[in-house]
Structures are given as C-alpha cells and as structure tokens.
Amino acid sequence: MNLLPPPIVRAPHGPLPVLLSVPHSGRDYADWLVSLSRSGRKSLEPLEDPLVDRLVWRALARGPGAVIAQAPRAAVDCNRAEDEIDPSMLRPPFGGRPTARSRGGLGIVPSRTAAHGQLWLRPMRREDLEARLDQAHRPYHSAIERQLSLLLDRFGCALLLDCHSMPPTRGTPPIVFGDRHGRTAAPWVMTQALAIAAESGFDSSANDPFAGGYVLDRHGAPNEGVHALQVEVDRSFYLDPEGSPGSGFDRVAVLIESLAVRLGTALLDRRYATAAE
Image 1 (tube, rainbow, N blue to C red):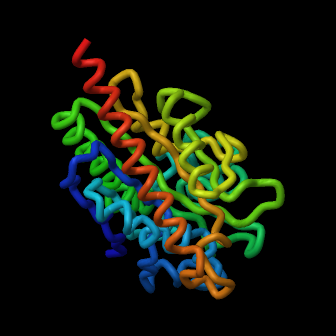
Image 2: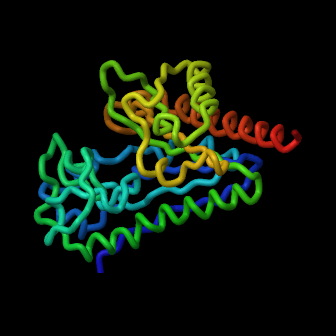
Image 3: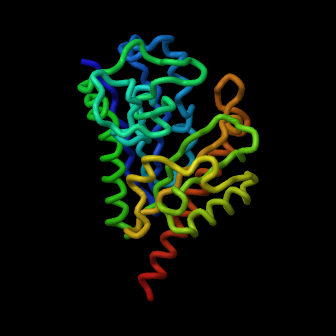
C-alpha cells in the first residue's frame, strides 16, 4: 500500500497563544511517488518551501505549538481545499471545483510546473486521491483544529502563523503577509506584523501578491478569537545558491520568532484588556 507520513504535531507548551503551520516543507519522497513522476524527484522538489520547517526553530523554542507536514507538496498540498483539483488529474473525472490555481497546475495534487511541464505519467484514480487525503491532508487540518482548540481553552484566543517561502520576484518585497484581505485576522494583526518586519530591517507588503490560501480560509475566525496570518519569505534571504541555509538564515528565523512572540503577546494583552472591561 502506498503510504504518506502524517504531519509532525507539537503541542503548545509556553505562555503564548500561538500555533505555527508549515504545510509545504515535506521532503519524504517515497519510491512509489517518484516512480509515478515523468522526470523523477528533481521535478517534484521545486514545489517545496525549502527548509521552512527549520526556519521556525527560534519561534518554536519560545513555546508555540506547530503542525508541520512531512508529506511532500507534490503528493498532496495541505494548503488547498479537497475539491480544488485540476480536472486532468483524475480518471474518471468527477465534479471538483476547478480554480485558477488548479487549472494552472497547482491544485491539491500539483499536475505541472512551468519548468518541468506535466509532472505525472498518468492521471490518478479517485481512490488514490482519497488515500492521500486520509493519510496526510485531513490529519494536517485535524491537528490544527485540535491545537487551536487547546489554545482557545487555555487563553480564550489564538494566533495561527502559516509559514511559507517564495522565489525571488522583481518588485516583490522579501516578506509578504496575507490575511485574505482582512477576513482571517483583525486589522491590528496586519498593522503590527508590517511594523515588526520594518523594525527587523525587512521591506514587506500586505496581501500582494499573496493573500493566503486554504489554511487561512479554513482556520481563521477572528470573530471567534482565532486570527490567522500567512507569512511568505523570499528564499534568497535565507538560502545560499545551492539551497542550503545561507548567511541570512538566522536573521529570518529571528523575524519569525519576533512575529510569534510580539503578536502573541499583543493578542493576550488585548484579550485581558477586554476581559477587564
């Protein structure tokens, strides 16, 4: 049976109501998965957000919880909805919900990239997709829900930081924050995140060109006390040209730590101030 590993789940253990999500750094390329690809592992690895699971180490040392995908994004994308499917990926086709992203090849199972074209030798069966969802995608989101519930029970509020990386793009700052255009976090969260980035020496932007994806859509609920913010980091700011940790790695790790600590502390302060009124 073809199996995918479940996510790594780290329960929060410190004084902050913060959970980190890392959906795109999985590197467990099983032989069966590689054998299904047209061009081998080298065509699948570019889908990763490389080493973001290591980039969050400073933040995790401060006590936030974390849910970290081990399954590669090439196998199943935990930042896509279950029905966000490229119609050409399944045989026989079924009534999914093609979106601009899935039609472009980046649905729940990526189908093609600009560099490598079609990724797979043949379409998937529906039962194979269901197995991938059961093994990796559904456990990922169930774990986020459980950990956020723990934070809500303990603190009455929670902050979800969904961590990603992006290729360098001319005109795009090195840090891009997304809150689905204000739908998944209170306005002050974005305002303070932009300020923290500036104080840390990084240019940043809000919701341009990335506003967040399914992780934020599913779990962000500011009216219920759960604020969700996506963090995109330019890879050239933390990797060297060979894809290993570069000279800026720790600087970016410090930024993510600052976001977790300062936004988490601010959320608690606002929670306690409201409770005292």
